Amino acid sequence: MKKRQEKRRKELSVERFEISAQKQQQGAPSVLMAILVMAVGSLPLLIGLGVIKPQGAVHAPLFVIGAIGVAFIMSGVMILSQALGLPQKSPLSKVLAFVLLCSFLSPFVWLSFLGDGPIIFRIAFGIPVVMVILVFLLPFIPGVKVISAEEAAQRQVERISRKL
Image 1 (cartoon, rainbow, N blue to C red):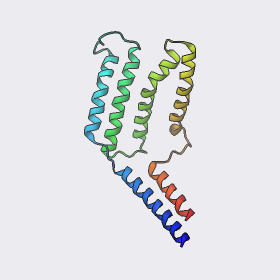
Image 2: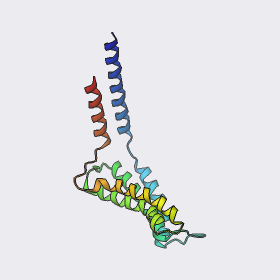
Image 3: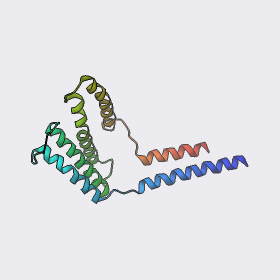
Image 4: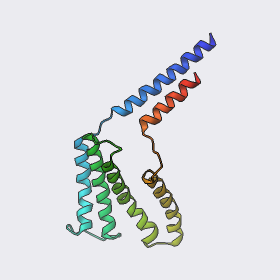
C-alpha cells in the first residue's frame, strides 16, 4: 500500500513538472511589447548620438548613455524576432544576443574600469562584472553547449521517471 502511494506521489510530481514546463512555453512574446521596448531605448540612443541635448548634468560619457539605448533597442529586436518565429539557435539570433550583451555590459565596464571613483569601489564592482562577462560569453565559445529550457525540463522529467 505504501509503495503504491509513493509511486503515485512521484507520478503526480512528474505530471506537475510537465504541466509547469508547458505553461512556461505558452507565453509568446508580442510585437507590441517589442515596439514599446524599442521606443524606450530610442531616447538614450538619441542622447548618446548627440541628436538630443540632455537637460541638466550628465555624469557618464555619451557613448555609455547610447549603449544603454542600444541595449533596450536590441532587447526589443530580440523580442520581435521571437514573436516573428526566428529560431533561437540561428546565427542571426546569436549575433543579436551578442550585441545585446555587449551593449548591456558596457555601462558596467565603464563604471568598473574607466569611471571615476575610489579604487576599492571599482575593484569591488569590477570583480562581479568580469565574472558576469565570462558567464555571458560562454555560449559564444566554440564547443560549449548551452541547453534550452525545454531540454532542461525534459532531462529533469527523465531523471524523475528513472527514480520511479
